[in-house]
Amino acid sequence: MKKALLIILLVLLADQALKVWVKLNFFYDSSISILGDKGYLHFIENRGMAFGMEFGGPWGKLLLTLFRIAAVSAIGYSLYKMVKRKASGMLVVSVSLILAGALGNIIDSTFYGVIFSASTPFKKAVLFP
Image (cartoon, rainbow, N blue to C red; front, side, top):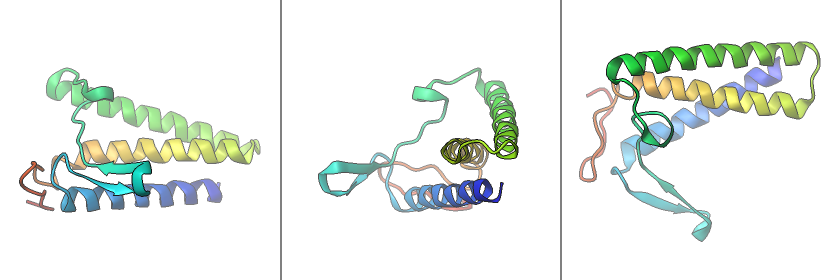
């Protein structure tokens, strides 16, 4: 379980550090080239669910957050059971990565409207506005 927890912690820290760096240093809708022409880091925000779909206003956001917490709990419990029954290392790593991403989504949806000001194409966000 230590290996899985370490993976989750490292991925979560890297994910949040990159998001904070982008939020504070990029203008909204700007991008930089990474890996030459192979990829770009593009700053865009998604206020809703997949593909920007929104769900039921403030109550929808609360319901979505509760669903995310339930999903993370289920994934975490499944990961715990996998480790206990000595499942494949690749399966444990894969589920750990999924869990880290899901935890990152909960953090984002909970705090990004509170600890950062809005980003615009002309103004970078400020931490603790």
